[in-house]
Image (cartoon, rainbow, N blue to C red; front, side, top):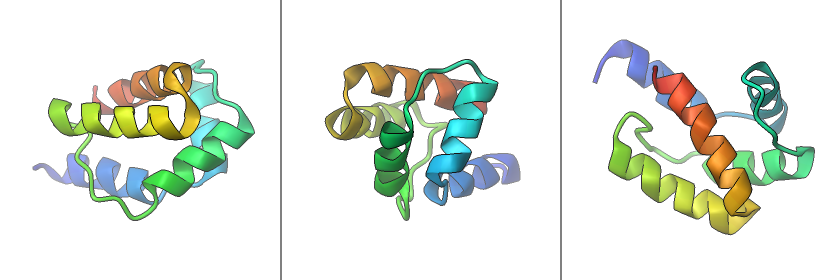
Length: 84
């Protein structure tokens, strides 16, 4: 895994609701403050590689349970932007 991937994955495992909202706004993705808090709480401390499609798919399914399927779709769009 490259240093770039490590940095992105580390950032995701430590993201705050405010940061998630900022990134969502930057990429025109709809996420409410409450959803961002739930997602950030879920992601905190998780060691996940969003550059691995199967790991990202599992993560998105878990986010769908926490914040709903539509929000999970939006977060997946954000993750895809991070991996480009």
